[in-house]
Image (tube, rainbow, N blue to C red; front, side):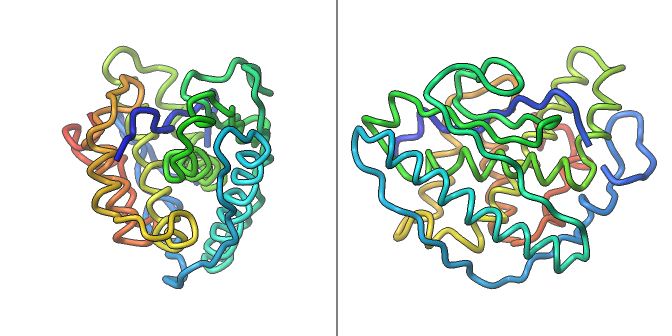
Length: 249
């Protein structure tokens, strides 16, 4: 399975954690981190279309269907938890600019101030439209939106500003790996609709062998957190903030 273009990047320039004390090195768990978003445990059936080779229009349709699927999943999950929920805006473009600046080379980012997920259709996707690679842009960035709604990004931002060097890198990794875990939680309900017939173990192995990113951490750890969310099926399994440094490097 090819995974050279796995989309796990985000432009997170400001942030949100529900009120709670913060330790020197990491945010303390609070509502959104400690498991109140338990999910329903039920499979989610979504109508996600095929991607036609070389078709920008079909990629747009795929991303919109993925967004609708993610919206349905997280709306129910928040409702079960008794928390307010609102979906992000979705911007799909073939250009390089977004509502919060230039789009990363990875092709997807979350703009917290605008509560907008921006997806850039990349040339390689037109020639090699592997569903899980492309679907992951929505799944991961929606994870950042969940972080905003539950307050995680505010706590991250409060800790990030006074930090420097390796401390900042670790905070970035904790943020990104939690979004990976949230993507796994979503996949636990919707995988059969997103990529029918895919072998989860093969996907996770491919994630673990993807190119390493300084901003996101080691692929093996990203894969481990995504797998943890998938197998746990709830955000309570996604507390990267109290995990040891070796689990998020």
